[in-house]
Length: 113
Image (spheres, rainbow, N blue to C red):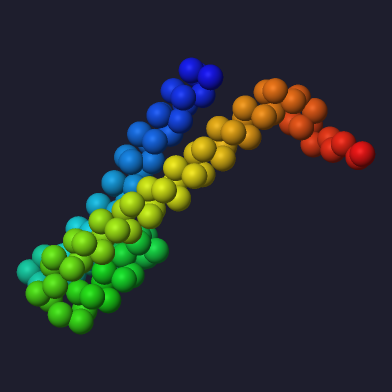
């Protein structure tokens, strides 16, 4: 049980790191979508981070003084994205735990009752 708790803590740490990097890069690209910071790199980053930057980019296009609104939206998106990444990690941990407890599940067998 202690090993499972440490795996979940590690998954939580990794989900924070992944989400922070992905959403942080998207936030920087959205905030730099107006001159003097605008460049070709902004377009590439916005395409790479499209799922987490589309709403904030729409707000920035609506008005370039909405920096605080963009930050609040990106914080909300950060928490949603972090929960999604953590759920993926936890599903993988629980699947591995079940396969270790019941080895025939790892082979794809199914019981017919």
